[in-house]
Length: 155
Image (tube, rainbow, N blue to C red; front, top):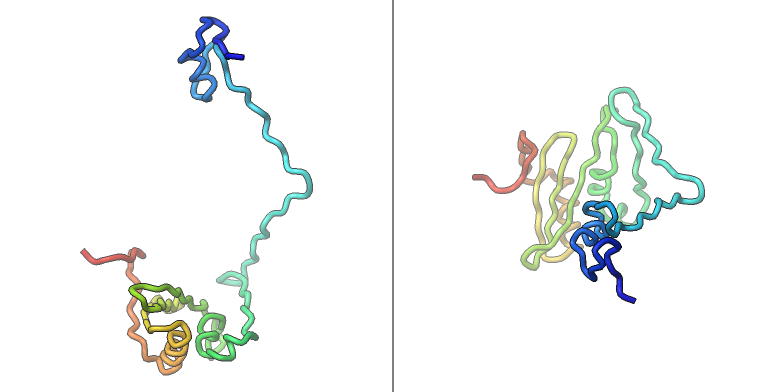
């Protein structure tokens, strides 16, 4: 069965086409059938807002009881510790791992002090060992974050 325009009787009508594609509706020409949105059945789950703890957000401590944490204790402490030695609060650091030109690379970011450093090695295990050692001896070439927050190349 071939569809035809209800007004003009043509097999292809540009006004019907616009209506069928939900672009525009023209009285008397074919319009798309819009189905009502189906509601999900069951209970909706919402994320709970974290409570504020004084000045900063509520501190959630990461678990440091795994084999990687015991192999690289300084790295695990850098990533999970939420307090300084004097008891003041600390924002945990971050590490991003990636490969480039056949080498493993790590970007270490100390969010609490606003500094970052890069380190590279030939293998992942050796990179993590070097990173743990460099954090322990503070032997990284730390650079301050850019004030505008934008990375990339200098012009």
